[in-house]
Length: 114
Length: 112
Image 1 (cartoon, rainbow over the protein chains, first blue to last red):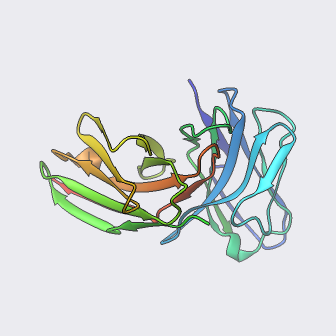
Image 2: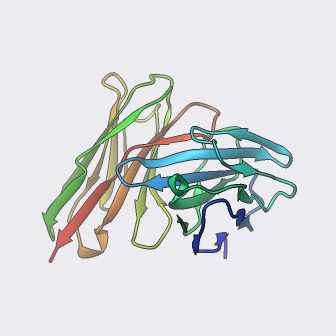
């Protein structure tokens, strides 16, 4: 089954404790992206990757890091999480960055930073 | 940069009624406009999309219209059913570029 898989689905942690949210897709997609969803703000892009070893900032990149060492994986790293990063996070992928293609989303990771 | 506004934020209809959600965008260069449905506990799922060279697109009970001059596009759901209850997001994207700018979402409630 074609899918985007995120782990963990839920996490409660404390300020300053490094965490990683994993994202994996099995569709051989070139493009991957991370979004955060906050009430009243819709989805905002954090980082994106056009292919292996190619990443760039989205609209709200502060406090986040990403890496794309393999085509299928695109982890989101919070080196020193803070309460304002409490949010619902989504990973998405699409076939190619070269033209507009439907994006496939994971089921989300709800992070609570205390 | 692109900005997408979406209205209404909540919409309640009776089963069988039609529902319309409207979005406006700011950048006339945008040429791809998808609509996503998000059910509770799930990620957004694409339900229909339209490109700027088309004015209308239909898929069974769902249709999207695009007015490039006015820079707005709308989602129309006919004969609504309780399973249509969800949050709906519109989005816009530039040509040749995958970044989606999302609206703030519309919570649709269909009552039996």
